[in-house]
Length: 380
Image (cartoon, rainbow, N blue to C red; front, side):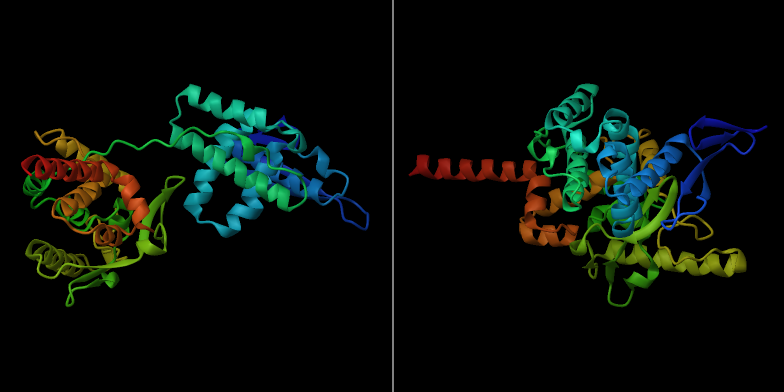
């Protein structure tokens, strides 16, 4: 027999390498229970599905909700609250935190008995394991939101995560180029398939997900305007197109007068037309501006890894694709472009976001202001 029970209601098929979850529900009016079997590729996914099922069953019984565990509630919250209302990438990120961290640590605790002290111990432990403060703050925020929903549904009187102290947020160290170094990078990559990638990041400040998702239908070649309307990201190893990070990220960026970028976009268009003519039906046209030969879009990690391999063979300093976006902001700031304009071009939701991310740039500005005032006073 190829199927073996692992835990109650979960069996593993050694031939198909699949986990089978058996869910039994009893009709309200009585009668025999109804049996449903679902398949999952991993034991963690099977356990999460079973927890969500148990939570739903307990919640449907008035006097049984007190038996609900934290793990069951988190699985139910992901399935019934997060899944219908959030993007696939957000759901995936939340699921990884719950499955790999929160459930193993707190899953067996009764939901109604979860204390602030237990949550605080969890957060401190994750920091001790080496997770950065910003990541631990994400764990804290997720748990707070899940428990807040439990409060709204009358399962809890208070949110125990409300009083747990999260670690301070940290400002990540950004690597970026000045205008001269950026020009050298463009020269090194001239004529390669990475040239349009780095120029879209450097000239326009695009995120790598926005570069991978850019389509010709959003490029006005006559008006020389690019509309950023989508992002391309990976979920469970599969690339998907989704909306931009926020409403402010939907933006129009003109490139008229920037001869280098004008020439590049026209060259990419002509290469696409020639390849479509040469390959005929074999060309898998999906409308992407940046793509493999044959029309298939790139994955963001593939482009990032290629850039690092190229940089390793040069004397140019380390930088990531996202670092080229930071370079755009740095160069704009060095040319006295107003903060509001930089923020709009980058697609930030507010200038506060821009100030927080690029605080190091504004610190330098404050220093120069202080120096100028000091010189003026001393000369007076």
